[in-house]
Image 1 (tube, rainbow, N blue to C red):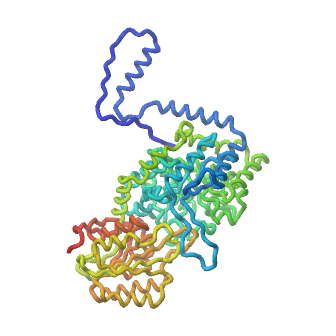
Image 2 (image 1 turned 135 degrees about the horizontal axis):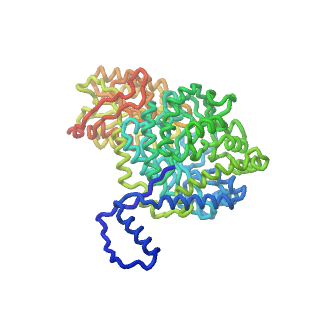
Image 3 (image 1 turned 90 degrees about the vertical axis):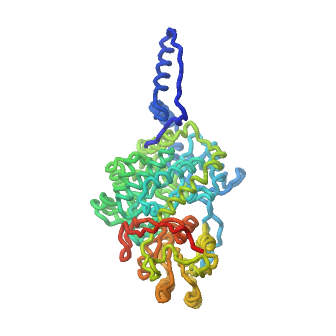
Amino acid sequence: MRFRFTIDSMKSNLFLKIKIRPFTSTLTALFLTLLLVFLSRPVGTVVSTFSTMQESSESWVNETLARMSLDEKIGQLIVPTLFSTFTSTDSDTFDDLARLVTKYHVGGIHVFGGREPAPRVLLGSRRSRAILGQPLAAASLLDRLQALTSVPLLNTGDFETGVGFRMESATAFPRAMAFGATGDDQLVYEAAHITALEALAIGVHVNFAPVVDVNNNPRNPVINTRSFGEDPRLVSTMASAYVRGLQDAGMVATLKHFPGHGDTEVDTHLGLATILHSRDRLEKVEWAPFRAGVIAGAGAIMTAHIELPAIESRPGTPTTFSAPVIQGVLRDTLGFDGLVYTDSMSMRAISDMVSPGEAAVRAIRAGHDMVLHSPDPVAAFTAIQAAVVSGEIDQARLDRSVIRVLKTKADLGLHKRRRSNLKSVTEVVGRRSHWAMAEKVSRRSITLIRDDSPVGTGSVPLPLPRDSEILYLSILDRDSDWGIAWPSRTFIPELEQRWPRVTAIELSDRSSRSEIDLVRSMVPRHDGVIASIFVRATSGHNRMSLSPALVDLLRELTKQTTTADMPFVTVIFGNPYVATALTSLTSVLLTFDLYDLAEKSVVRALAGETSIGGRLPIELPGVAALGHGLDRPTTGGVSE
């Protein structure tokens, strides 16, 4: 694992006048010699005290391991979860968490956002239960739990798109595929660095990112835009930059999901996926970004709940339980000696297969160091304890994982300082400079893949004056589960600032034939049409397309607007592969993202306020090749 320690640069050169006198002792002479050597170094260089720090860390690891009981060692391998909404110290929720920390000695806590209660009713609910957490609430809760531990907690988070992925008002960056569309790994580095600063302020030390899966299956329901793209070289470059960005700021990067989750059509939240490729293919494609990330210094790797027959000969055995994959490939072939986390053990690919206790034991035996998000962390603890006592898991195997956990904590300096400074949360999280970087990435990721409109030189930027009548359609894959941010909530007000005369209509899989006919009849009364398509590749749903009725409507609108010489622009949010089912569309923009930031960026591009220059990090079969993208310069905005 690699972390960078530097001395803050100074604004002017430092001069020191020393009056030389006869040395009264060799100790004094040695001290002044070392002082002069130190002061002669260029300002901002790394100081050789790092070796001393390493010795101190190693001593702490050895001393801590020597005094730990069996229960304390076992606890270090278990990572339960919490929700980052306000939690009183005088509450059952806090008591439960405190018990995991004090009685079961868990190695760390995984931080989710929030969850609202919802009724379990037939026909379901349109609301999502997921809500964003609160940075101060998370920091306060983690700090109180740290105060209860004899060994510091190593806390984790799924901050793939920044802390704002889980926390309200924290910086939220675009999805990884949007970074791939920019082709700029320096943007990846800077985004990762910012993510680390905000996460560490909250008290989270390990980010379960970057996703280094090569998304080469358009029907992949669980990776999709979470991947940088389908080219292993691009994914490797971006992943390496992300690792450096996180770890240069002092946070552990996690490569996931080993041995590669990109070429599957099964969502492992719902079932066990299988990758049927040969070892030669895996070496060249799926494992290339992992190898690059290991070389870049990644401190952790997360495995996937997938079956890999080329390596694991036992049918139905997921990577999670496979020593040939973990020990044979990850440890021996790739030479990785950092922390290995399981993916969530509550996912149905595992939870439907075995009990929480047996799952934990089998994961440790396979070579994992950390068991993440067990449905029952106490059962996991008890089962591992019984396995060690019986000899099923030997003491040396247990100690190897405990040492990796302790070493990571020491490398981060948690053995010296574990508590959070709540003031730093308000000073670091969600800073304007951080959001400015997120906006820059979003702006540069916008990709124009087609602009064959019959209107002059094209429909992008939209060639309509400010007083034009715009028909805006917000087209949803389904009208449920939009809990965190409802589609078009930013697009419509941003559009109205440029073109005040906007008629906005929402359509979804629940739209009736009469509603769709109404939209069709309204087109001739407007000067231009914009359709925003929102299709998610969402864990746990396994649905990634529009309803046939909405696809037919878009085709008919293309014919209507072409006949009328009217601008018609389609913007695709989320799953970019939707474009392959809409080959007749004349002008198409991709964002590779969802929610407010992407919506604002697209409107600015449509208005000609920003240039367009993104490139496809994936192939869209039948539509556009890898690397395709049309350029558009700025035009100065909407004309009066």
